[in-house]
Image (cartoon, rainbow, N blue to C red; front, top):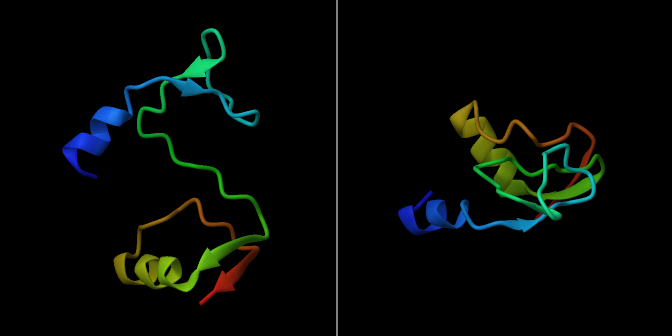
Length: 69
């Protein structure tokens, strides 16, 4: 993550419906929170290749998924 991208994590955004985070006036601070990937989502094949290469990368990828090329 670049320094500029890390700064954006401190800008408030609207709270997603499925987020368990506390909000103030419907806004939350992302603060490096991982995104939820729903079961059955389409995942690009390079995500899985990178995950296998690194071994610890992308723990939020569901087992029930569709792979795109």
